[in-house]
Length: 48
Image (cartoon, rainbow, N blue to C red; front, top):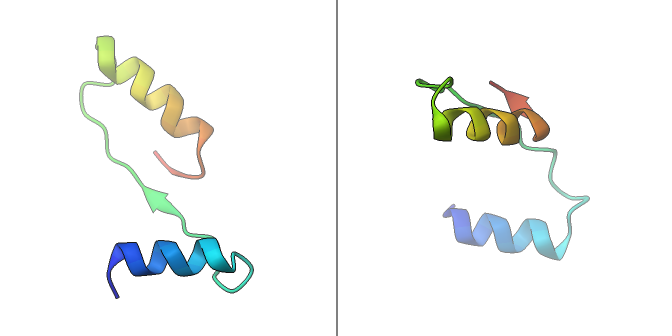
């Protein structure tokens, strides 16, 4: 199933699908962009 179709189905009925959890691997997390990226990722659900 493509990402678009799955997204449309979840939007149509969010209670049908379980919560999706992502894992992120970030290099350069102490740089200008990395600091901000890691902060935003930590606000979301998932493993960083």
